[in-house]
Amino acid sequence: MHLLEGEKLTKQFGGLIATNEVDFYVDKGEILGLIGPNGAGKTTLFNLISAALKPKPGKITFNGKDITPLPAFKICRMGIARTFQTVKIFPHVPVVRNVMVGALFGTGRHLSNAEAIKKAEESLEFVDLLPMKDALAGDLTLAQQKRLELARALASSPELLLLDELMAGLTAVEVSEAMGDVKQIRDSGVTVIMIEHLMQAIMNISDRIIVLDYGKKIAEGTPAEIAANPKVIEVYLGEECDVAS
Amino acid sequence: MKNTSSAQTARRFAGYSRNRLISMGVMVVIFIILAILPVVAPDSYWVTRISEYMRYGILAIGWVLFSGPTGYMSLATAAFYGLGFYMAAILNGPLPFAVVVILSGIVGFIVAAAIGALTLRLRGVYFCIFTFAVVLLLNQVVLEVERLTTGTRGRFVQQESVHVAYWAILIVFILTVVVTMFIRRSRYGLALQSIGEYEEAAAHSGINVVRTKVVIFATGAIFMAMAGAIMATRRSYIDPGIAFSMETSFLPVLMAMFGGMGNLVGPVLGAVGFTALRDYLVTAYPDAFMLIFGVVLIIAILFMPNGILGVAQQLWRFIRRRTGGSPKTPLEKGGRRAPA
Image (cartoon, rainbow over all chains, first blue to last red):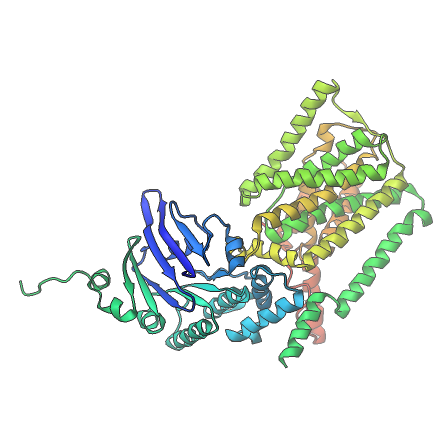
């Protein structure tokens, strides 16, 4: 049984088909990369999994349970946490309390205040934000806010973590740090699906990659297979043509 | 090292810092003074005045409880307050006064939960307008029902004495303050604030956004309806226009902005200051009252974005800087501009 499985996930916005009968799965302990040109439907797929949007038609199962009809907060409590492409933190709330939200509400268990604080501080420690815990979240830099979002997601003790462009806008050093973080998260037993535009990063750490284009899945395989796939090269680099003629 | 910082944070949220103990002590002393006031000074003028302050205090806190952190501007206060009026008009007499007040709270909660479930999917100005319309709707419906059933416009209410009403409103006031403080400090306070800051992120972090909003909105309505039931017994006659007066919806909002919404002192300060100012202007300048009142209000909103409390904080910071102390005040963090 796969950890998470999507069957024929379709989502239309008016006449625009954002995802078109996408089938996918992720197994426990994997890092699954999700790539594709802008507008390919990557974030829509995340929104479908996390129940920000509902597929029509389509079915999503998590640990063998049909989670398609569940609201977003239940999805989170079942163990699927996410971050957002544009950071969505609580700017006027202190950093530690931002993360406590995940610990208090997202785990599906009842934690006491002290337990939640402990959990939040552990998550903050992991993303190196513990020294900032009493600052207001809105006062952090963008890179720090992204790490804060990651900490909030981790505090909800997820089994599956959806990372939407965690590394976009980061410096080279920060990217390599983030790559280390993702690997460490996986090694701690959390399965990861990540959307990323940085090829170097995604090729490096993914166990498997799915390529979307115009809402359709056009390729799936190991990073090496994807790099050699003519369809993927066509989508990213344009069609091959005969220069001589 | 890590453990001590964790313990410090824990203590801060458990709420037993020295400042908090002091403020709780001050609160208890104020409550005791208020409780014995009618015995010491039975002069009904002050008893009535203070009942009035507490009534608006209840309404302003009840409003801030939900609308403060979430930024959902509710104008339904008059609906729940008026509901209390009619509960008292119909039931006071056949049922003991205390039972009427408690029943009003329960009915207020149920009606508010129903209204909340319908309207809280709306955001921003749509929610605001809908709650405004609820008051007008109730006004018309009650008027029409009265016309069909009793054939009259209004009703007589069995009165309670000034002192009974005073103590009743004091009990509800204390209840409002204590419950609101408890909610604000609990995890639901954090949930509400998260919803106000970024509703989508709150939902994806595991907060049951709809239930949290509806329950807290309805909790605020308990106090509003109870206040209505008590204040109705100070009148002999009510009709839908009095019970569902829009003033009851607008004034608490203005008072909360006037006082500041960072903590609970703000709305109470706003309620007292506002009511006192209005009383003074009505007696001193009966003709120009509304004009002066309006100008004062506009100046207050323009130049005191965080209310009286905000001004007090700035002053405090100024004094601290002069004397070389820390410039940060504890209130600063919670301070938020009025919801738009």
